Length: 484
Ligand code: CS2
Image (cartoon, rainbow, N blue to C red; front, side, top):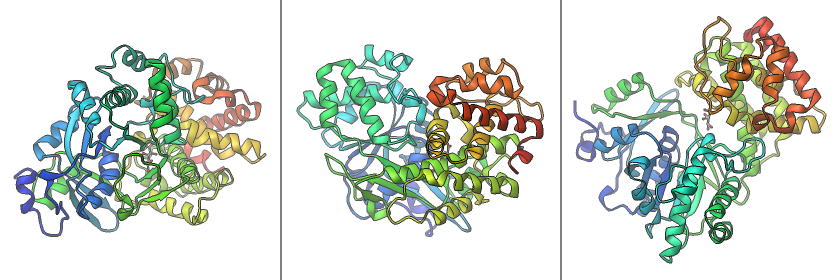
């Protein structure tokens, strides 16, 4: 069987969409950092629509910041890959927006040079929460972070997004070029503002004048990104290969739903992403809080409690009426903490989330979502708790979700099997879990982690609610505990 590439595109079955433009003459207006499945199924798909509509400026030079896997898979395919939307019917498209794939550690200078090209108008990022070296509780740059310290001493060969961004902005400034717009597409609260503050701080540590320049001149629009994109599996590859009649080493699969809300603040131009349904607005915050708290907050709750209950995927967990009922209650409890975005009906939004979580065609593993809990809990579950406490509203469902994370982070499941806990703080979590497996020991040991809980960790009502929820979870198991 042949391999997907520019040369074999013509062999695709006619029902499969493919680039209708000449990939050889695309401009490279976008550099993307963090070439994971999410970027390929989300921002690249919006950009593909712009290219298809005839605006050829927006080819994507994409970089992996760590591993060579994606480049090794995509380079023989000329950057082409398949996006499969999985719903009642599956829809396949081969996307061509990613034209070049770099591996940052192999040649950091090449990535900086790509970012410093005159035509680079946007540098977008999907590098996951933990890559921002941000103290999750205070939101400030963690200047003790090993990557940050490395980059401050080696800006010519950086490792972190801030090192690359700062090196490239400095190079552009020296060359008399305006800065690019920095477009954060990770699930952080006020992601653009957050990155603007962190990047200004980092650049200021390199050179005070550069810090002031970044603070004053570099636009970092806020965004809300949404599409459920499970990790690609061997079965996905086999199914897609059969449909294509060609081998694709790294296709991506995702749900049909997709949403992108973007603050319209770009200093060097942007693609008309609204062609593919993106919303360009003046204020993203209400959309972002809605999505982080209702979708991602529920996702994390399903991940921990569902995993403990023995469910491998979100859809399996949601097929359990007890779990589904709990998730619906958690969302209802969260709703008073969310300001209504213009034109949104929150009850309909919640119903649509429940429907999306139930999509049986998506094998979205609870274990995948459970990763990096220390980086996700603050904005997904703890900020809502702060707001609920301030309003005197019940926090019982949130307390059970946090207890689920604690039980999971302690590293042993309900059948006594070890859990593969992936988290930048995994070592400390494991150390604290040795305090004891009973709720009265485990809950305080984890609540005292200031980097996660901040001041909330000392709130007596929150401590009592989490300790009680954990006690019940340990006593009766997740399937019973969610019944309330
Ligand atoms: C998930 C998200 O893995 C996770 O933490 O909650 O990746 C989620 O699927 C996306 O944010 C949906 O837009």
